[in-house]
Image 1: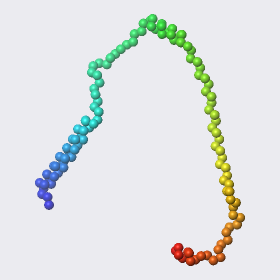
Image 2 (image 1 turned 180 degrees about the horizontal axis):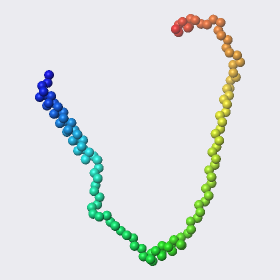
Image 3 (image 1 turned 120 degrees about the vertical axis):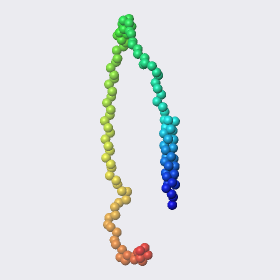
Image 4 (image 1 turned 180 degrees about the vertical axis):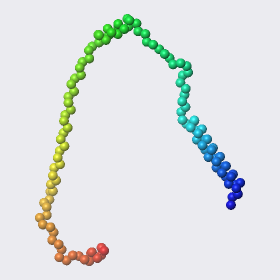
Length: 116
């Protein structure tokens, strides 16, 4: 039987192995997963659009001179769905048997015993 010192040593080795595996997995996440790169440093750029009166007048004239949109052509309505054809009755090429087959007078018991 193992002594207490051997059991403690085994426990500490197993604990160390598990901690090493967890550290390896944790460190591999930094290697595999992408890092969040910091965006450009500094203040964001702020801009304003200044339009002169001449530019505004020119834009309004261009809008007035542009051709008027034509109304869309009427779309033909879709055709109604085709009706589902009803299944035709099945017709047998051979006529039905007029009377059932007559029972045998002497059934073959030899073959039946061999089967059993």
